[in-house]
Amino acid sequence: MNQAIIDRTMAFAGILQAIAQVQRVARHGQGDTDALAASLNSILVTNPDNTSDVYRDKAALNQGYQLIVNQLGDDKQKDVEITRYLIGILALERKLSRSSSALGMLAERINQVHRQLHHFAITDDQVIANFAGIYSDIISELGPKIQISGNPEFLKQTLVQQKIRALLLAAMRSAVLWRQLGGKRRHLVFSRKSIVDVANNSLTL
Image (cartoon, rainbow, N blue to C red; front, side, top):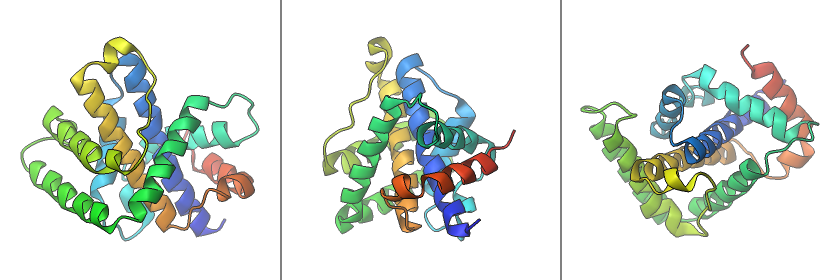
């Protein structure tokens, strides 16, 4: 199998893995801490030597690969909400890629998080708040906001809102990588079978 497709599928799994956690946090008020850490860590790898470097926790990507199989495979049970979030992220990423000032601010703010991690774990509330602030200040300003569905009781809690924004930033990181690796929307239609095959082969049981 072509390495470019393997790398692109890994980045696409990264997008879906983060989006699935957005959905889980919005519905249940909390997610899986390891999965959260894996998504947030991907934001910090800004100059990887290869795609694998961005996703150190391969087990965390399993959910993303499974979602590729579910969403792009022959299964009729597509998750419309996941698709909606994905379309929103890819639209915002297109705007980000055209804004050199936004990209510059993003790099600067991510460097600040690196410094913060000398004192805090990546899943600490203060670090999550910082990631959420980056999303609100830079990404949200680029275009239409992504409407998140979930349990209203949880969605009004500040920490839940911050986790969701931090995870949307992680989804954005993977979307940027996907495009850098040559990912295009048309691949999701015309290369669907290849992407699903790679995802199936990449699932660790």
